[in-house]
Length: 125
Image (cartoon, rainbow, N blue to C red; front, top):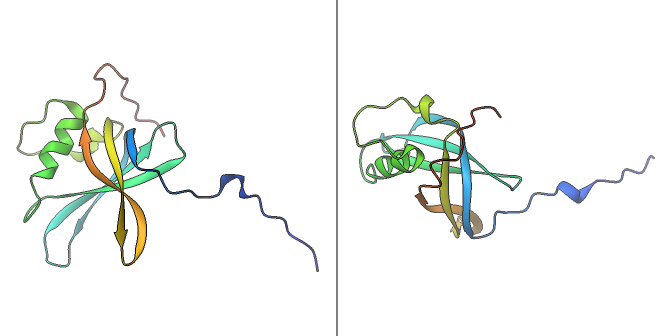
């Protein structure tokens, strides 16, 4: 039987709590079990080999988070209809905390904030 040696140099490590700059990689619209619509944003954490998801409700409890998220992406959003595609590639600051879900620890975005507006917007991944 042949011996196989795994390479653990790229082993997954959870994102440590702290503040990071991220880039919106993609999104998908979904519906919660209660029937409320939301967007799951996938963020690439810059300077780290990590991605993290952020959920923003479009209706129901917690829907106010979408306004803050979009404003922190572009600095201009002030409410109303929007095209999520225009936010792909945007940079955003995130504060990551350690949370627990079903007895397991995970990294979670606690809040978002604006980063340097002069940073280039890069839509290529």
